[in-house]
Length: 65
Image 1 (cartoon, helix red, strand yellow):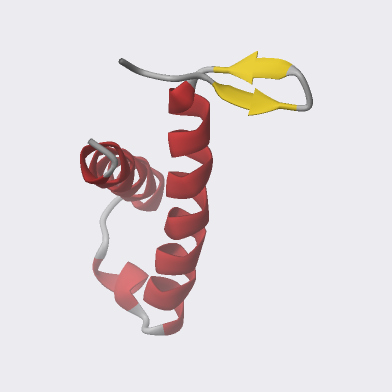
Image 2 (image 1 turned 180 degrees about the vertical axis):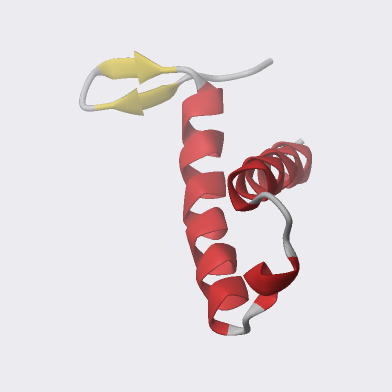
């Protein structure tokens, strides 16, 4: 059973916690890719960033199962 996250008496859905964890990972990966010059080879950076976030969110959700 999926349990809610209790934050100061407020029950939050688990996807919110997963999304926050994925966002932190996404920021780190995006920073590393930009420092490495990877974005020179990307045609549409906002679309790539969205896809990267969805992939990281999927990894976080699957890793917690």
